[in-house]
Length: 213
Image (cartoon, rainbow, N blue to C red; front, top):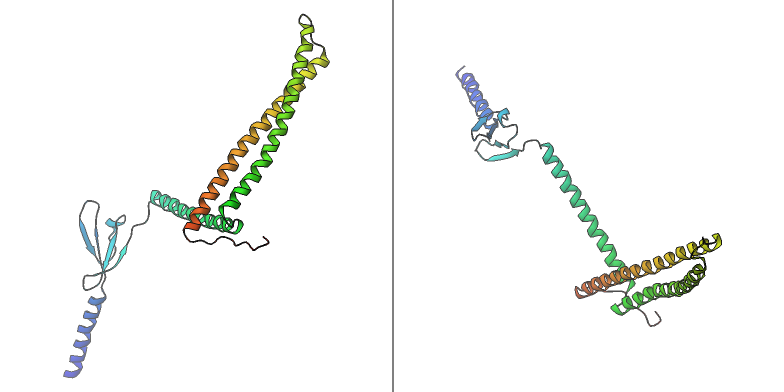
């Protein structure tokens, strides 16, 4: 009977110790600076970090408060920024690889520049020749118009003058667009030459040309 009583008492003590060891303690500090301890997350700290402590007082985990709408928006914006930056880096790697596979040296870049500029220069020269023809025609039309100083111009002459002015505007635009395009071509090849030089100086290996390439 005595032994049975001792076993019951021992079980009770062990159960108490086990329950105490597994008890949870939550600690937080409110916005006003008050520290709260409880056996469950204190509602007063719903917007504050809550520390869950082990029986020895060490921190088991920290329960972060739910994000505010502003914080969620900022987190989403940062996530998008990181994704965009990662995509930018991947795109740059693709451009770098293409550059190294296209050119063996900077001289090839300059040759490609000259070919691209030559095409546009030829377009400008054709437009300039056509423009000179139109300007000579305009002079002729102006001289013919002098005969009608006190009279209304004939409809045919009006149409010729209007058509001439329109074609002059077209050729002037062709020349301006081609010159702007040449500036963009130079910017592009300047950037390619600069990047190619950076890659090679960093140890990258461009395409190797064979004797017949």
